[in-house]
Amino acid sequence: MNAEIVIGEEAGRPVQIDMEELLATRLLVQGNSGSGKSHLLRRLLEESAGMVQQIVIDPEGDFVSLADEFSHVVVDAASYSQGELEALGSRVREHRASVVLALEGLEVEQQIKACAIFLNALFDAPREHWYPALVVVDEAQMFAPAAAGEMAEDTRRLTLSAMTNLMCRGRKRGLAGIVATQRLAKLAKNVAAEASNFLMGRTFLDIDMVRAADLLGMERRQAERIRDLQRGSFVGLGPAVSRRPVTVKIGPVRTGNKAAVSGLMPLPEAPKADMAALLTDSLVEEAAAKAPPPPPVRTAPPAKDLAETMADMSQSPARQAAEPVDRTEAVSLILAALASDPKSPFQPASALYQAFLAGCRSKGIHIPPLDLIGFRREFACALAGLDRVDEEGRTRLLSIASDIPDDVLSPFLVIARSAMEGRDAPDEEELARAYGTSSPGRVRRLLDHFEREGLIAVREIFGGARKITVPALEAAA
Image 1: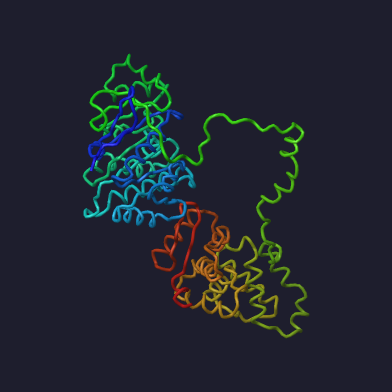
Image 2: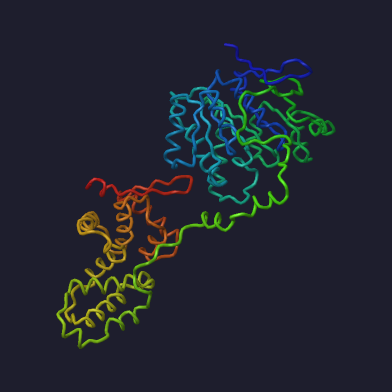
């Protein structure tokens, strides 16, 4: 098999890249926005598509169109959890599939985490799956930043480790890194330094120009050559490209960026009044259609503090005493009234129990129907909204929660009720209220605890969604 591809031409002569040499020596591409960097990567990928497995990290959705012409599989990272991305990376190496990891549906820090997790999975594949593969990382300054910037420190360590492994140690595992960046000064030096081949496009900032000239072995005064490059032209150097610097004009491509808009387009010729009408007509209706739905109407009684709630219960004691008392119904009403108070989840159990006893006396129930332990569990049920569940469902929920400690019973019942109702996960506010906290961190730690105990299974999606299942509930179904 011929291992060389034509990347472009210099003065009418074809410029080739030796793919076998490239697999051993890696490639760095640099060029300001609009210099033709993505066009170069697309040309390289198209010409080598039938020779070697290709894995593309695509933060902007520029390369998903490769799947239309070639056998690439587009993987939308926003649809998968961390564990699923790790498994995907392992399968990609095992089955030698060419893939495009599309990250455009994620926020920047989520993109960085997803990329790092996927690259680490490629790197950690078992030895029998160390097949040769090109790993193209576009916008590499995001994933291997020279400075921490605004990302969390643990995220920066994770992504730098993944990119360093790719460029420094990936060769022995068959991984040939191709990193492309707009700014050399923003790319971590230990990542850029591992490349032996360079294709440098137009850049205007002195710091990037000087660094590019250094990598190409040019003198400082020759750096102006990089500034004068035309769009789509690159200075190439390296064992896989040329032993001396060559200026190559990148050749045409067959696929295109579906999101790209290049060149000028004629403006619409609509009259000014018609254009104004197109912009302003029915704005109110369109805004109303896009507005989020109003929150559901709460059927619980108005929020009151415990003293006011108990005072309401104590009205007309003589009339209440004269009428027969349904203890079960009365206790349920008292618990529901306590649970509806927004302050109740933050009150100590002893204070709530005293309020409960006062409510019982106001209803003519002078012998406590529940001790403190029984009250805590019944109040947890009321706080979790089990009064809105039929008797069969309530029995199922209480059965699987029989061994749950009282202090976390209510949030567990909220999760289990949500799963039984077919929802992916309970509302964050509802879960926090059941746990008696306003801290998202405490809620996350609680979910981690439940998962470690095997009570729930949490599937975090990089797009921001969360799905929580309760294995015991599914087993009992």
